[in-house]
Amino acid sequence: MSDRPWRIAGICFEHFHMGDNLAFAREHPRAEIVGLCDRDPDRLEPIRRQLELDDVPVFVDPSECIEATQPDLLIVCPSTAGHREWVERLAPYEIPILMEKPMAATLADADAMIAAVAHDERRLMINWPLAWYPCHRTAYRRVQEGAIGEVLEVHYYDGNRGPLWHTSGKEERTAEEVAREKPRSWFYRRAAGGGSLLDYLGYGTTLGTWFLGGRVPMEITAVVDDPPGLEVDEHAVVIARYAQGLSKFETRWGTFTDPWVHQPQPKCGFVLVGTEGTLSSYDYESTVRLQDHRHPAGVDLPVDELPLALQNPIAHWIDCREQGSPLDGPMTLSICRIGQQMVDAAVVSSVEKRTVRLEEVEPSGRERAEGS
Image (spheres, rainbow, N blue to C red):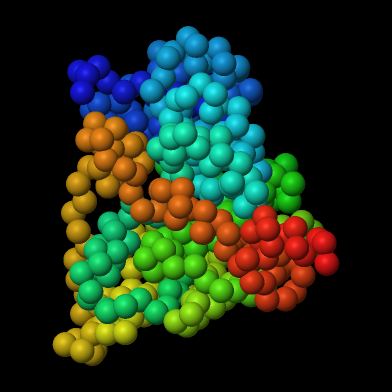
């Protein structure tokens, strides 16, 4: 391991989570931010000022940024529809990429991203912010220890007031600012991959697959709302049928409160049902609740104090590089692909208003459907 810090560049600031990821890099003792790049420099200025990155050079061309700064890691935060384009554009540089969630807009895009790094899949990491919450990490540890037996059901409900009500660092916006930006935001454009289903369902299906030990459902049924004046959904309910039972994944833009301030009702997070008990893990809470044969009324358990390597994506990536260890569960492409396959099936189901079998959205399944 070299004594020099890991050099990190932020490229494409379309998603405001770039500010959170750069903040993690700024705080890490082994990281150095060496470049910021966006086709619209004005878009990155608020984050640059907020994190006091005045000495970090700014670029409008990714090639110039990479050549000038020689980064070890690229943080990339485009709109959902742009994930494939950016991975394919940056993969030839053979520099690891940290792509902000979701994995992609479609399974075909996800497969193209995987193909672009096929000779070394460690070069692409998908970041799911929920994966670093101590409550969900604690729930996963308890599941692995057999606290509730075999997991049979995953119940997921998550979202917030809407993607425009806050910026990086969860800084709140006013209703007037939200109304002004909504007509031009990519979050509300279908072609850009907008909508609550694409924004939030991947969290549930990917972490749900992690909790379920990599199981793949047989079929998906999804229903979305149709908000007046919008071309994307703000509420989606998805049912997944597995060999062992049903699981539910629900996404919502428009919760009464944001969960990092006050938990709305329904609460945001996960409830896991197993053969020997149940376990609830709600976003940002300091306890998880276990119900088992010893505690039929339920008991609150404190969440784990996580090591730095499991606190955020930058720390995890650096630790994996320095230790020579693989990426962790929800960040691996195999788990992410299952989650994306479920999202694709949900999109088809919501459009065609029918139950969709998982193999239908695989390339071979699509070819059979088109030929029939």
